Length: 375
Image 1: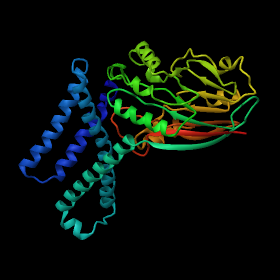
Image 2 (image 1 turned 90 degrees about the vertical axis):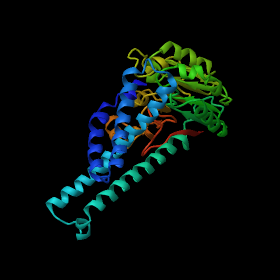
Image 3 (image 1 turned 60 degrees about the vertical axis):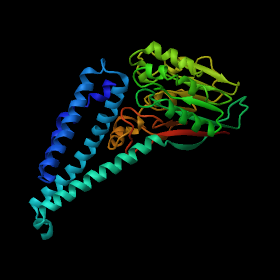
Image 4 (image 1 turned 45 degrees about the vertical axis):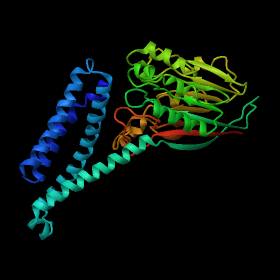
């Protein structure tokens, strides 16, 4: 909870800037300016109430604060971007005057018009961003892997879900929708690539969301690994809750599926004592295909060096909010999508859930369906 509420830069720097430019643009009528001041004052008061008293406040109130302040935080980001673009336009006119005479003679009306356009544009963007989360896309990926020896399958349909972040925002109804979406694909196997829970486990426990995940249908089973969020807060309670879902949690372990291919689940990268992949593959039949489930996409070279057929990851959310997807490309070798390194193929999912408020800009929540052909 507190991780998202600690958006102090936006609250202490962006809020004053947006307030200052908005104050210059709105009509000077006292009633309108009072409403404008009250909006910012209430938001700041709400934010700092949640920031300082999050342990004392009831969950229902804290969830409301998270929605309200989280939504405004994202609005501030895009309001600031829009205002900075206008600042650049104004600066260009100061250096090389080019404004039409009509704008100069109707400057007050122009400012009000820009104010309305920016507010309406950000509101439309937020509506679209919310739909990106509430309506996950189903992403179909077709892959061809070596068949290997003794593999009884010519093809395999695998559902990959990552980063559910069940907690204050992602609750029972959303998880029920994810499960229905997965079952509609009629997968042979379901894989959950970490970050089952967001911060606290009590939201999933109190709503018995494990009952929903038990409805996942796949003849070859449901398997998952830990993500970095499984190491936050009440770690042992999270492990017990995941076990209640009926899924098989693979923690630095490998399983042979119907004597045909291996599925290896790595503990999260945050665990510096996790076993090396070479140790996990010791004793396996290397002539069979090997799929590796690893929450964070850091170990591409290690997977390729060990001859893994397919690596599946999540974690990045593909940045979740633009322009962060651009920055992710400087952090990860592949922050999202299909990738190949040597003979090893990878898919990094943007995740089906979210961190923080339920908005995605420039990214989507996705459920991935891997159509694997063994040849």
